[in-house]
Length: 402
Image 1 (cartoon, rainbow, N blue to C red):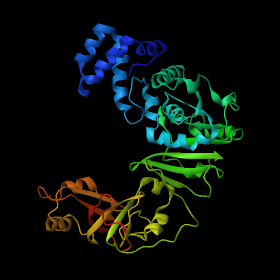
Image 2 (tube, rainbow, N blue to C red):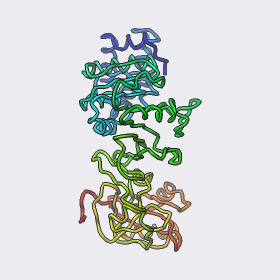
Image 3 (cartoon, rainbow, N blue to C red):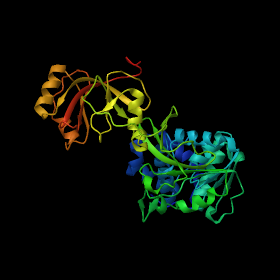
Image 4 (tube, helix red, strand yellow):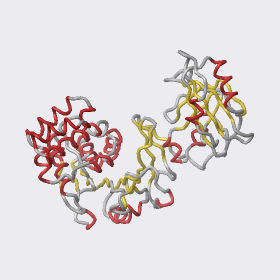
């Protein structure tokens, strides 16, 4: 993509560019990769502006789900690091009691917009001038500019410590051009956030979902957040917004359900498959709450080191997907699975597994499927008795749940 400049931001915010971007948005997505489209833009707007226009048209398509619709402007890396809208809105609600909030490392405004939409007054600090200009544009377009003060500055010098009671920090997580999950390698590093937390009532700090839990300070709250089954981030909290209790919590969005530790980790319960199989949400896995979820579901594990849960009761839960177990037994290879599937008249087949060294996608391609048959899932799992195979049917909603 062509590097964006302040001059480019001014141009992209102009009526001329707005008309061109609207025309590109109205066309098919494949036209954005067409040489003919690029040549037409070059003839009308010049080479540099044509590149900016085409980049923005592509970025707007990528921004769906992260930003509200409208003529917003983006920069590629900032957009990639921006939070999903529902995650940003959930975090903003956490900060409502504080009234005025610092958004530090605001980027192009994903979290700033969510904070302002929630009713907060915001001081949005972004050290990159181009991103700060994009942020100011996006706030004007979204009608939020009156609630937000945009500052192009480096916040780590302490100049903003008294500007609000609370802060949200989203550090850059790249080192040498590559992503990093280390808290010490972010820009700014965790040490700067800890210094900030000494001056404010509360600080929320966004980290990569793969964060090393050994790096998390002892006084920080830790939550792993998923959205519709996809792990999105880890959130560290300091001060008044820190959840009570010890241990990591799992937060499942869009509903906002929380699975929190309520005491020592329950002992492992391990047995053969029951009538139902549960696959915990990835937030539950990262939070280390699989056994706690098992106790809630009256379910047990297939193996002490495998995160599948199974039980004889069908319990609806936001913290796991549920399947009805149709057949189960020792994994005897592809031919035995093929016999199971033919006996069931199974249609599309998905193979999933943990702790078993199998090419799941390759195995699925080699299994039979009946035209028009019901979809089925094969689970392969390590167990104390050896590799285990389970043929299962997915459940929807509260089907047969208690």
